[in-house]
Length: 381
Image (cartoon, rainbow, N blue to C red; front, side):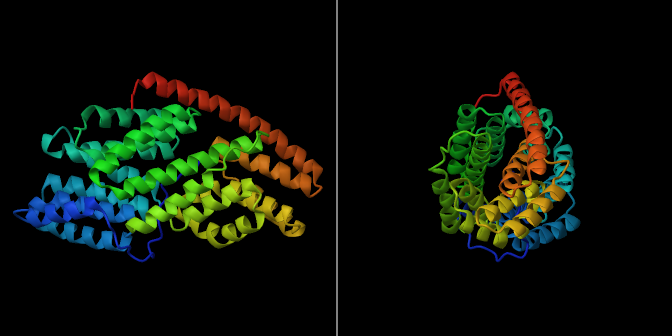
């Protein structure tokens, strides 16, 4: 399963953000009658900076907000700080457990306070997203329900995030029609708010999930039907350049390499993997490392680099994470079976094909479980 919300490098240069939401937050901060009154807008601005990839600038903004909290301690400031620090943990190093803990704390501080409903629904949306990443569909649905039940219509940032999550969940479950309905809702909320960071995340996630689906199909012998996918990947790059987003600087080339591998563009795919895969794995894709390394081995085998391909395939075997999702495990075994067969290592090819068959069986069962859970939740886009 592609996790397309992985964070950018903390060392990346701050982008010039051209966001209607950023401009509105700047106006809200300027119009606040006191520093304390500006706390919510300042926290939201820091989170938006982080979501755009301006992690250093976001940290500076949060440091100032911490200083305000020391001078004027208040539950509202505390709740927003925990929420913002949770997203900082996520976007600066992909410390998912720490992000979960901080956001859960923000939700608890918000309690049932009407004044903190915005923190509460935003926390619920992100807890749903993190539960999806943790592969916990029960918690994902639970937090999504909380968000959707409580969020007023104008809380577009939270509603966009939870809609993205539910779209991804349906896509992973194999129901693209239901996924599309949630994607449309996510785009609507993000567009109304002028939230370019959410639009960028939506575009990347959609392309990433489509690539994962096509990888599964291509490795199970189905005909290639993804001729438009590269256009989607290029659209992410062009959109991010236009709005000043740097979230996907290292991740989009890896997605492009996956598509090229499926299309048979082995040399360019190899080059992109070599250039961008190490950094991408350090930004949260290490769970996908084995499947991406197996792709690289397949590229090398097709380019006649047989010795290097064999070493790469062995590395992919070693890197196969027991915690990785079933589809990534199945993809890895399927790709390694192809690679070893091309390299004349028939025993290894047969072994990986048997492992792939079992992993695919388990994955299809899991997809059905997700579909049943999502359908039973009665959440409607």
